[in-house]
Image 1 (cartoon, one colour):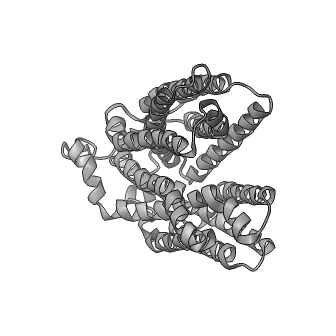
Image 2 (cartoon, one colour; image 1 turned 60 degrees about the vertical axis):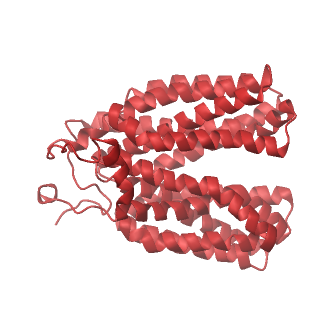
Length: 419
């Protein structure tokens, strides 16, 4: 009987990499994920200051935010083709150069000579490079996970959360000290370039896991645009996308609406509402850090189904709970239940190294639709039925994610790997 953990990769082939190289790769991925969180949170934390510098309306700020979203969608759509051509490591090397430059351009344009169009372009460049880097780091992280022989993707995403916490903290400090946006964002961009390039040096080729496999045929998914786009017709890709969509919607709706839902629906103060959001983020982080042990012990499918149940129960308590105190229990369960869907979905999408970039790109695109489309849907429904009742849409998608969880099942081990 094999002693391989339930969520271990289908092969133990490490392509000639020694333990030191694999661990260095893992540690570098921690930094890469954290830097991405730092970049995003640094900009978001200064949005009120950007609005004041521009004298912009809410509609104007919505257009600026759309610039980031527009660039992100373009980057996601092109990521699989770029990664297939130059590899995840090179994609990250360029992404961690261009994305910070775009971010710095937006910061300077918001301060030195406030210019709406330049900020929009800078954010679009940042968004496109950032989203391509996001896919590349998930592809590289999944390959490192295969080399390690155990689930670790949730910890990578926990480090993204650590980065967002650091970015939000630095942004709040910059606000208190009245640091100009250009100086703050410029400093963060420089840190990202320097630490990013130093860390990327330790990443390995994600195709190492293909050593010993049969050569990829010329008409394989990884060889042509048509082949890579055909991954969208694969039922497993779409089902994994449903998992990621439901759990990303659960996470994104909390990020955007939880505080307001608690204030309007449970009559708490704004300060208490913000504290409750902090409880949700903490539960998410704890879930991702502890989830790897559950994945090693039970495997993806039972953990994903259990996560969906936790999120469902948590949402029901928050929506229908009689008091804010009881709603806190629901918030904790909601956060824990939402924590593993996205990272585990990324791992499942990258099971086959030959189609990893195309499948991760497709699944990430589906998942990010939840972050882009979810907030306005909740807002429209909340306007008519109340925010708490609008969260029932999230409940439906979480149920769908739980039903689709079987698609994330680990690939069967070959006889050689079992031996």
